Length: 300
Image (cartoon, rainbow, N blue to C red):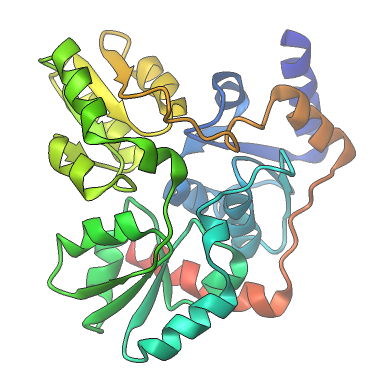
């Protein structure tokens, strides 16, 4: 593994590259990244880097967002097959059809989506800023695409009418109330933190529903010593690294995104050596999608 890390450092220097990794990546991949974060943090940081190449350790929609925002840089996706089932649950044609059904609604598009879907949207959001984005819009009706659970969570925090598209994150959907009940029996003093991509029933049983970056901040600032975490298991590593005196338990082992785990140090090396998996977005789509991302970043 040391040889792989040394080779990555050599390639970073020769390519003038920066490596970014999502909080759900394997621990060893997070360790070689220049910075880690959630979708909002990574979108913002990628616009600030001084590099010719961005190596994205995450899933495709994240690397696509980096390419949309950084047309002058080369964006490499560390693992070509790393996709997102939720992002695949809608497409541009479906969005246009729903827009015809609800012509008065503003289209808020979760960042977990393709460039073509973003191009059909008024503004993007992440789990960290979804409510703020919705509240920033003048329209009273919001078509929220594609995550029905995040959209429902936002609907409980705003007076606006939220129209829900029937998409979801499979790992977060697997978490149920019984998982929380069983975990609380084992750890009665623990704080339960879940992701807003979880169901309304799960969120109602938790102490807080937070994005990955918000969970990290909450745990760091909290006086609690034990936490039950309801999001993809990769976050446990970052939580443990930042809080050595605290204990973190995953609510269920089913909280695993196989696509997030496809990236390995070997695939990062191959991607950089061969400069493969270059992410390209057609310019007419990129320009329109960038408007939706720029509006989100301005609100954030």
